Length: 444
Image (tube, rainbow, N blue to C red; front, top):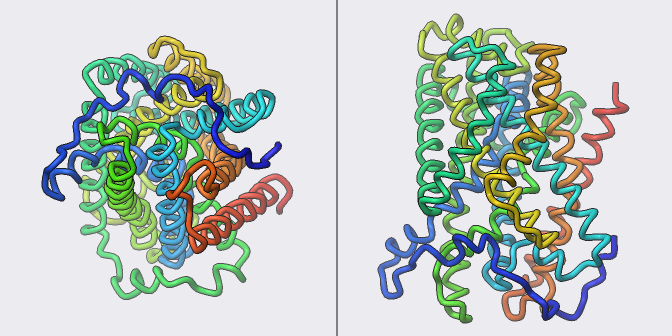
């Protein structure tokens, strides 16, 4: 892949990203800080969804059950990485008025773009796979709907998403925010009844040497990091930040970057709480009672109520899982539209684009559920996270190159300290993901 920086963007920039909702949400020109913040708030919540999707749950549960609170520091570091990368995504979208896919099409040769698009579509399909399976497992746990029927039911989400976007982008953001509140409430309840040990919990936020020296702990830690930063989120955020009707001059862009970064940072703090809560719940419930073998969503659901002695414990867990799966569906399918339009400049009708995205995920999930049942879908969930890890560098590296380049970003280009930081973060993510892949396929 040729990553040599061109002098600037090409002249033939095409239509706005997500043109049907571009610049559709008004920003008060002379409003107070809080009025402006609330006007910009929304995209951050949609990004945060990718950091708490069902694909993260298995690694958080396994980490907490096996090693107690120790891996909380890995979740914290992962979230800090995510905050920095999402800030770059915001800058790219606001300054250049291109999403990451459009920026790649402007910069790279057609063959490179086609390859990047294929990789991105695979990543989105893998992410959607995790959401389909997560939602189907939740429906099975709550209503005893067979996994195969649960997977079929999730295809109805396409119509729901289409209806929401037709009503305006704020509707999608509101639904996402509401579902995040449900997840927060469920895990708030779980944390209260599980009564975690506060001193041990706070100690877990400090990185320990044994995370590196203990191979089993290192493997799960890398799994948590690899499953946290989602490649499709970088494409998504650079697009949906442009739904705001801010002034497209230098001052307006500075203000937009400030408020959009604040929005994403606050939202990712919520994602940190939810991911940490899953691990804390597993540590307080399973690790302390000697049930260190619990490693997946089904085991966790079945054992929460007997161990905690609260009949609502398992139900709240499953409701949170269902809300997580539905939320991730909304953002994943939207990302699919953005990358297809951005890389290929092909516009399909929204219902057709989302139906294609959903079927790519539903068909393999359905086949595996029919042939192998619950165990097969759990293995497929793990595989989806490995696929996501493989695609991450193909989104992170172009984003870092573009935002570091003064010819492309002007005065908004990353300053020296940020340049060094983002390359260091990129290197850590790439090396750890390569290690995770090696261990998955060749490790014992």
